[in-house]
Length: 390
Ligand SMILES: Nc1nc2c(ncn2[C@@H]2O[C@H](COP(=O)(O)OP(=O)(O)OP(=O)(O)O)[C@@H](O)[C@H]2O)c(=O)[nH]1
Ligand SMILES: [Mg+2]
Image 1 (cartoon, rainbow, N blue to C red):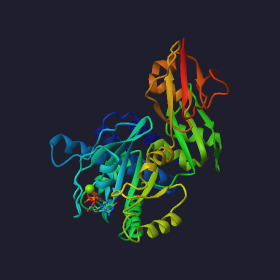
Image 2: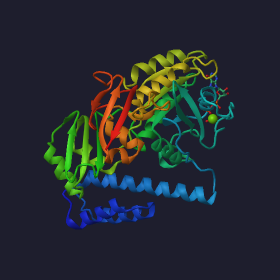
Image 3: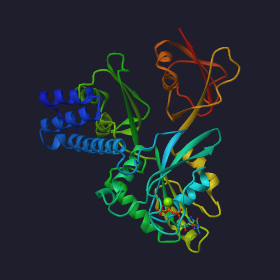
């Protein structure tokens, strides 16, 4: 149920949206929370606001740590097509996997908690690369702040996807339960939501425009417009994919629905019993989470990982081409499935959006080579896009 905020809270919300620095955001959010009346209708809102506040405080703490040089920083700059965190209990083989899959120089050892700070490495897949990060081991209680637990979960929250690493020879199902429980407590979702909402502020052409590629459940476009106005958003493009409720739209306003596409690796399948354990786990886990039997020791199963990550993260590659050039750019733009020519134009430079005339498309999404399309045209993996400006 959307909250009908009193004017005082609406003004405070305006401040939250205008806040620039983390400190300002924290202060504005604290004031907003205390201005919101506590009742059934504001439950969701308060829940999301408090969660956002907690995340911001963690982020601030992390920054301070980085500046002061107190202990290792867990923050790693994103590189490549996507950042994916390897999560697992101690000794599950995260380091050995990272070493096998990437160029990373990391210590592998048969005692627990060998890796004490995040270690990155790049995994090549066709013409792109994924950044894999080994996180220090998770442990029960991580989400409640045991050891470095909340920082490891923060790393996962900041990433684009998760690889859960299980030691297949050592009760992997129990490991999986522990990891899923910690993720659940940290409000990180590994199961794909039924729908997705994208809110692009300032892109509604001085209105609220709702574009529906999926369907609205139990609400109308007018409800969405009202909700946004409640939050003082008057100009936005709202995109609806899949099945979406008004609650989903409200969560999207806060921009912090942390669904992380997830892949499970049952490692050490070269050891006795691990394959049987893999089969059991693969039967239980929901279909949208791929489960792979692998061995970091022999390399078995690892050649499939790049493609599986690409598909699970729902990425697409688009190659831009300048008018009058024969060849498109070698390096693709990385976008998400459902992206349009507008997203392509925006990833190059906002100038291409402002001065957009039309685009020409070659490849899977084109009806014929060189088809002329507008900003709303949905692109596909492998498309070549040429943008013409005024
Ligand atoms: N047989 C076998 N042993 C493996 C495999 N992967 C890792 N190991 C062994 O498992 C132990 C732990 O491996 P690491 O890669 O250090 O594990 P980790 O998950 O990084 O451990 P921490 O950093 O301490 O959390 C080492 O003795 C590895 O040799 C595998 O696929 N098969
Ligand atoms: Mg390690």
